[in-house]
Image (cartoon, rainbow, N blue to C red; front, side, top):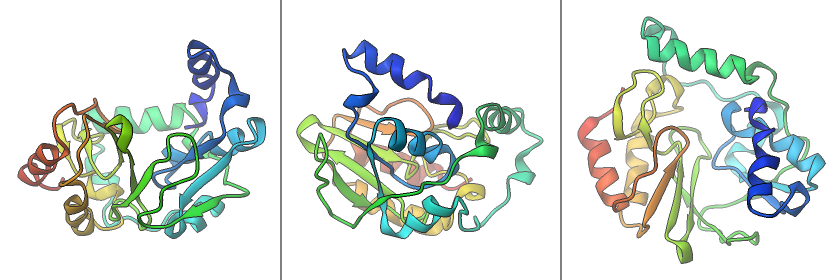
Length: 211
């Protein structure tokens, strides 16, 4: 989200770097809580911004495809209200669109630091992709999974709520792509990291089912 930008220089400074050391911003998808600082990074760091071709138009226009559900039915929950307040407080309503993106395709190995491998996991968005840093044993699941439901507060690996998905059925089917992955750490956009095998996270997500 745009409000998180000030965390970036501080985090880079802790690594002995600054914003001009950033070569690329690689997006798992183009929802508002993913692209909030991407255009600013593109301008200030001169970083290229990468996104799957199926989400490129969303990134450029800021107009996401319609989700299959509605958040309105969850607003009686304190967790959902806090999440909406968090989005608004951090600038979700003024997320800048991306003027320029580099698109990637299924299975690509991106020519950026870390050389992540693209694992197509559509459902949350049409172009949603997970990213594997194989040599580091790190899987960025993005919103293919979360470990804390942002609307209900339910914990444990699970697919995102239907209110945020282009197709929950497809999101569940995409778990097949993550099941055989070998990684020591799986990182989610929502919730704490998972430090067991991705296959165990997938099994837990199937057990919990959609929300």
